Amino acid sequence: MEIINVKNHIEGGKIAAEILVKAICLKPSSVLGLATGSSPESTYDALVESYRRGGVSFECVKTVNLDEYIGLPQASPQSYHYFMWKNLFSRVNIKPENTHIPNGLAENPEEECTRYDKLIESLGGIDIQLLGIGHNGHIGFNEPSATFTDGTHVVELAPSTIEANSRFFSSKNEVPTRAITMGTEQIMRAKRIILLAFGEGKAEALHHALCGEINPVCPASILQKHQNLTVIADEDALSKM
Ligand code: GLP
Image 1 (cartoon, rainbow, N blue to C red):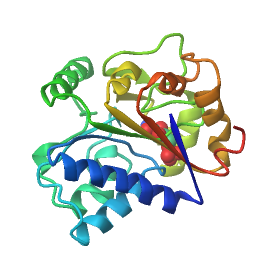
Image 2 (image 1 turned 60 degrees about the horizontal axis):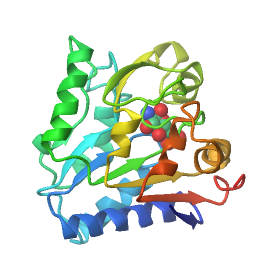
Image 3 (image 1 turned 30 degrees about the horizontal axis):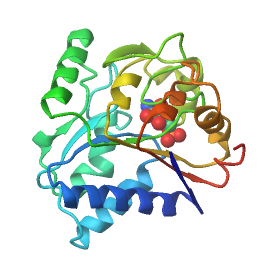
């Protein structure tokens, strides 16, 4: 595991973007596993910056997102579809057909999970997975539970996640209670993982994830077993290490 201690999320985003740009230059058809939330925003800004300077092309890049809320239309500003188009896809030359996000409006969410697993397999797996971490140690929407999960599945969101994510909605009651997420084992199959953590609010979860017992009570703790994990975090997020 490599830990890069950065000044702030801007510097962290630049470093994460550099890693992604290098990977895309080496393999233009890279499959990127992407995340939402505030943690990866500065990475997306830095990627766009690099694209505008001519440092990278997304022409052949393929993306698969970690998760999506169940029940939110794609056009809803709180959906992860909307987030990805606003923060990255509409700002670079990626082909829409090469971007993939679970369909939270699928009539049969279980079938959608199977479709998504097959899709990731057909792309040859994920080259680099970008991750944030929830305050309760979740990755994607894998909430603390009794077991680590394998493939894409439907989850009931933890009350603390609904609370944390309600900042993006006008009220807590509007936050969907279910989501579709890639599983923890599936995330672990990515060839390389970059975990981003900024701010004091992540200190506890990051400490458990990287130094605590590997236990599904903290889903991110499974990352300790990954062969190629880079953690990019600021002083505050690393304060309990
Ligand atoms: C959401 C997402 C996660 C993300 C987490 C942390 O619940 N499903 O993928 O890592 O929030 O978000 P933030 O980066 O905004 O703290």
